[in-house]
Image (tube, rainbow, N blue to C red):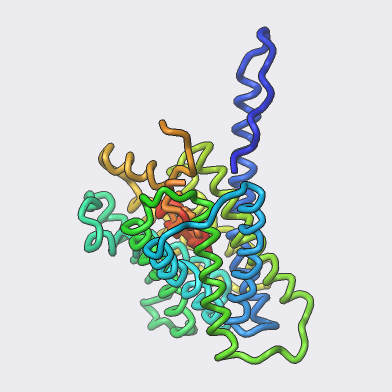
Length: 380
């Protein structure tokens, strides 16, 4: 939601102060969004200290759904209609929420939150790789192809490939990378199926997260048991992860996309691993080898190159998928199909991503934002 427009200035007053105030407000919200999604990996880590991974995921989706449901009620937004839309939303909920959220939770049982945050930054790389096959209109330029190669060199640097991945939990890392891959697949799916539904971004995103909650409500009791005791800190982490990272952050991203556009909003993707790393080191006392931050920088540089656009046609399509209910002039991460999130946004739209996203995811995070309605969550 965009902030209310500032009061009109008197005739004798220069319009510059109002513009400055507006930009400051956008920058603050952008910073808050980056902090929330960056700290999401810390919240996951803390949450798994008191709950099973599926329980952490179910909790975050439940509280995220509650926030979005309240927003929908306040705006008097209606749920989508039509079996086809709900069918596509069910698949999107699995690819952009239920699956990657669960994978990250399981991954952080054995890997640091810093590494999980860096793995999340690979979503744009997977997205471009998949788009070569799935999206005929999204062919790579030489710069983007170079970005893909650079990005994966960064991944190998983070993992310490030259030393045989010594000291690295391969399973946990693979799960985190698979979560990022899921955001990318979800973004492609959303872009193909939900970008022109005519339904508001908030309605699509809220419905998607709600469906993911139902999916986890079925799965969680089958693979977990009720905790014998509930610790306060892990519980608060799960609440923050859901209410802030999966609910409020998605709403924040919609406002940022509406005010400054999907391209600028998707830049939040590149701050997430930086904040996740700083939070893991400062709060959780996680250790970093030299190759982790160096590899992360290479990954982000490659991811940035893969997001360059060479044609007006592509840019126009991205704007259509990323603007949240803009007047006729992505999760719409990315956050929904952008028409209404990757790098969401929204991830992959949202929801993210990611943002969250991812779209995305986010999506999630980054890709979500481009994807459209899911700002969730490529956010993490």
